[in-house]
Image (cartoon, rainbow, N blue to C red; front, side, top):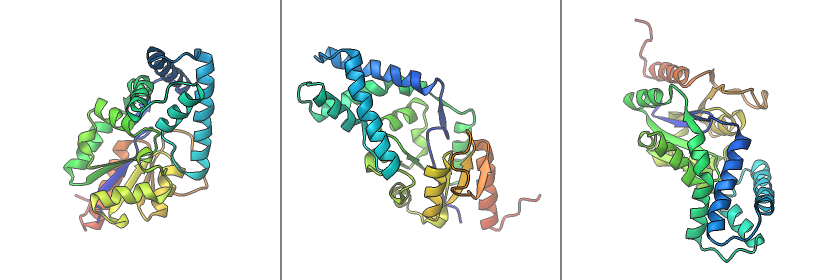
Length: 250
């Protein structure tokens, strides 16, 4: 019996409306402007070189070891190397928010996101969000911007856990929060490696939303592949009806 649906965020419920390189540049300019106002003396090019080096290093570690290095850590390290005054945690948190402001604005809803979440909720499924992100705050800000947080009883981010999908920790955290077993859940996501492999390894049925060219096509086979959230809803409904003994034939 299906009791819960876990869902990814980026490229599943929302998508970037502008190229990532442009958004990242705007993020850096927003962060730099904030820090200059707080006394940073470094030139923009010098500052961004240090930041990007730390960001790329953290991303490489995250990719290979599936651990998350939150943006707070990257900003703190950048400030130390830029010979900025010793910042406290509240200041670093504020800097992270300034960094993400342009990116929050760039995330847009897929046209069937709200309709699908509403239908899942109306059908009695408990919903959980599981997202790989360097910032727990950014994930929640994106949800709040689009009015999506109300749908989710559990929100799990790799930044908060410091563990990334496909490691089992984010999936276990979400299931525990919802009080369901792996066999009682379905995971919906766009990444074969992070979402589908992680869910299947943990014993959760998976639906791959085909948003972009498939990476690692032989890595794992999902139970279902769809082209939209609406199709994912139809698949979950079919599975739920089958497990309940309800015929889909009128």
